[in-house]
Length: 573
Image (cartoon, rainbow, N blue to C red; front, side, top):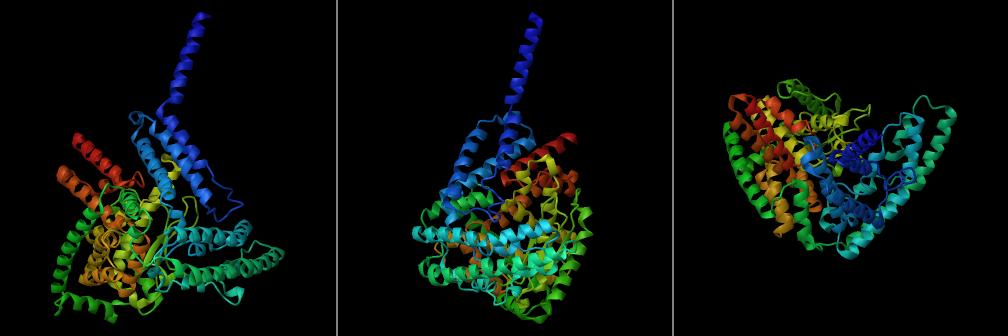
């Protein structure tokens, strides 16, 4: 009996130690955070946007950060350590979002609370999706009201966007949705192709409900948004464009540098890096100008690229066709550079008309890992004279493959090997850094067939290098919008339409534009380090596998992973 008691006691101690060990504790905290819902998603299908909600989220995040700091990282494996660091990074952003009252400013030059609504529009494949979509339409009035409360408080506290970003067609973001006939509304379009399995009685009922939803919950709400911007917001918001002019602006900008680059860099360090990169890239551009025997100055060559008809598609369809041809050409090269390729396919489609005028040149739109829908590479066919063909290869490899589609799909397809929050996570320094690195990689892949396309690649690289100078210039050095436009115009071949759109984006989204070039420079630095240290044993496919196999990570984690890979490779030689 005594032996049995001792055995039971020992077993109890072993189990207790196991339950208290780092891995179960970490997994328990992560599971709790992932499964927590801060609100009832059936009651609030478009989310909750109140100050109390953001306050409660920040409080919860602080509590979880304390618990995560108590975990002994020495007992965790590599994947668990990465999960720990990424969860802490994510929770800290929730705390900072509330601390700097960023929730009072739910606007960007090409995005924002009301610009977000068109994304709820999608094909309806069954009756359940129809009802869910109708519920979202009915939730729009509350969604608008809550966001206007935040914006008004932001105006009172000086946390707002500068007036200048609303002067280049911003009114289309709400005027487009103010229509006389409900059937002309973009939000009504899914009801024009209802699923065949729905009965006629159901269709009749749905269409009546849809008419009321558009007439009562959509069109009037965009009229409210229009009135708010034109008669209230624009009269009260700030004129200064730098975030340094807002409360705690300098501290907030440094915080944004840390979040978007995931590194401990100062604005001045980034500014100087940008100046150096601009000089290097411009030198390479001038070599290509000489290669094509152009007789004229750099500025005249840029004007030639912006105005000569040979560089522009005649129709939206021809622009899309060219993008598809480039994508197909890249697909054939992927096995030479990657060990693991994504299972999910992607398509090429135009940016929806409702958002195209203020939208970027192109963007990748991903889907859920378990979705039957493909990913989409959106190409903006609005204003074809501002969509040069010589940059289309760079845009395609960045947004589709081997850029965002490949990286994002592989991230989703990691499945249960990483927690769900990591499959959903997107860090610009990693994702956009990878996208820009892919533009560099495409030259090795033979994607750029003409000197003009190689110049286009340099134009896009210059664009991201200029961002380092302009973003820090605007937000820490008192640059004017005109100064920023002039700097970009004199150093890149981007169209003036694109330049104006981009500058407004940098003004309204402090720090985000830094992530591309900082991320790309980091990946290229790590690649060069691996090539030097491994010599003939360097394998580009293995290098890319190490970059991608843990999904989205901070640049500090990425550097640590590459260092470990180099060490393992050396030991195995």
